[in-house]
Length: 226
Length: 226
Image (cartoon, rainbow over all chains, first blue to last red):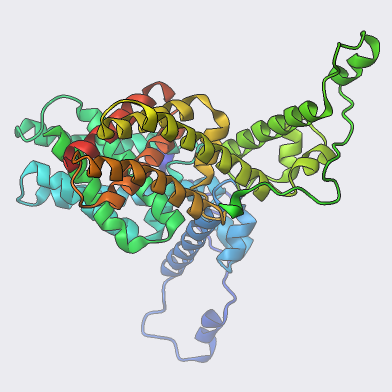
């Protein structure tokens, strides 16, 4: 996953451009707090704001139609601040994809640790993924970006997701709860079905139904494969 | 489906700008054919060329990032010729969506007429749709456009597709081959799964596998629902 790490522009690494918003100048006229808000935390908040803005722009206009200037405007930030954190929109896209994959990894981890049969872990993993997509705009953008034809990191990200699911399928096979046939195909079919459900929700704007659609999807494939 | 018909700019309706390409001037130096290629056919060919170019541009760059100028350039045509046929890129998108829906209607028609059980008609319809998507770039673009968040005609087009599938599901229910429960949901799940499979193929670039993925999809939902 080397290709999916965040790169920082070397010229500006380590320094964030001074913010000039009211909130910041406030520190000059009020008594200083016992410990001043550290620079690192401020940088973290700015970065989060940029990622949220990019997620919105990518979701509404699509990846190709969104420029760094669009993201600067959507974040109500400055070019300097955005380029301090991300040297290109590809870098932002990679960060969003990473966020999605990391969250998926967390769901898989907690699913793996739960004391339920392996085949129920598979269902729990997709239920958890559905909840993530419903709640987390950054993860939603990350998933959407993994189906961008023009983004080099999309295919490896999709494969990593299928790989994650494959490991849950393999456990269910090892436990005798799924037949050994078509293991990799089952994982890929489930991920593709998940993507389709998200796409349809985006078109029809009906997020309330999403979780039950994912239930249908997982049930359909698990029933037909057992 | 009134919203999905092609509009022509009223100023230019009925006239197509003269073409100046070599193929056309050819007529001046070779003996005229018994019947000269009619103007209508030339207009038809130009229109097809523009639709193909738009389908390519929409597929590679996405709908939002593609301008009419991009389509003019991709078609190696003139602004006048493109605007003679289509007054906006929305109009081109509607035409591509219409092409997809019309082709689906044809597949449904021939499926409905075949002498196989209703549930097999449902499978045949999706197999036919998979073959269409694999072979026909315009239909592929039309399907992709039905998941464009920024396109007003996308949601009604998706609903029309689900409606078409619902009628096949209803027939299978009437024939006692599927239970009456969740009929509309089955149709929507199948369409969403189809979209997901197409998306994944676009990312991973593996069209050879597409038909078998659609088989898996239809089998999974039909087995779990019967």
